[in-house]
Length: 461
Ligand code: UD1
Ligand code: CA
Image (cartoon, rainbow, N blue to C red):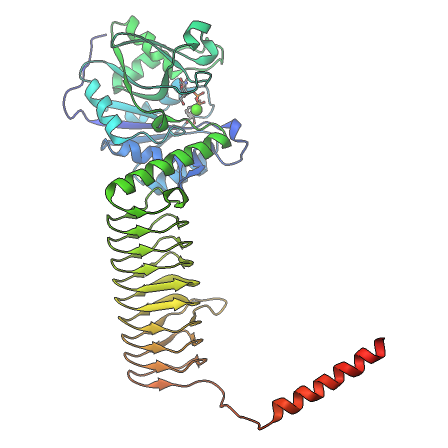
């Protein structure tokens, strides 16, 4: 077969292998749907592959195929799904993508969904190496030489073969250069070489890794591009999943610090795969970011806060002990204090909810102030209703706003009010019982109660 070396801007197709059960996870959930930093490993792999701007993407599914398919389509509705009915090995898995990529003129990049943290620069290096070699394999120097990764047998720049750990001799196992599983080659070459792969090995599987020796026997070339082990860490068990999470968190936190985000105790801050924090924002200790959060420059998230699906604009201060739920949109210089929960609500610039408050399905106007214990009663047991609070409104402490309801600009509610009717701009709403004082009654009541207690104690001794 003639060499088909890549030139600049070779179109690329992405093949993500996600058919395996992952028996060592001891889980009903397919392995690649186990989350790291709040997203299934599969999404991390698809995102990594996506950095090469592939013209086509195929996800190979098998065990738990419907769930894996749904997850893949949720990430990218244009992705093609190829079903591998029986998991006969990684080589067999790649062949399942053949039909979907038939006629595709360009390179194929194979990623394993259980090795999902490959960096964009690494894939760029692989694409560059394709200019000189037919097959490019991503390798790494393994930290623990007893790890059961495939071994890369090299000679100078050339990759001679990949030997699976199970099949390796003692001498081959001593090699510390290991296989990540990531492979790049011309699509037609890859599929053609794969046709010659057999399952004559220790696992009785069709190994993708065999393509190297087969390609070389056809006069094609192969080489290795190296990356850090943390990038290519494979996840096969719960322990490895926890390690992958830790490694991912460390990398994300380091990159946030590099970018100019202040964190006094970065090890205590937990981020999600898509957390966006701008330079000059400050994150105090023990803050958790679930997916979908963006924090603007100059905002401050104070200790022990939990944020999900929320945006925090510049100058805003959140927490300590605040909870932002999906749809929380905090404007510039807003304040959301301790034990305050915000859900599906917009706070315009300068609005404040400083203590013990629930704001759900609401819009709070600029510089409005919500007193301690304010609650938007948004749910009637069946439907959700909206609360509208105008700019500069003052909501007295412990006001219950029974939605749907609105409080106009500059209006006020008295503390302890239960507001069921709209309040016009500039009005004061008072909705609580009139206070009645009974002179001396407390004193007389205390004496009476004291006597009752004394007579009871006598009876029992
Ligand atoms: C594989 C490599 C090994 C490498 C390691 C890196 C082979 C033969 N071995 O081993 O050299 O060091 O990854 O992590 O490729 N899959 C399918 N269909 C199958 C089998 C697997 O889709 O029939 C998918 C799995 O879902 C997984 C990936 O391929 O995402 C890798 O499979 P796995 O069984 O975990 O391979 P390893 O034994 O880890
Ligand atoms: Ca694996």
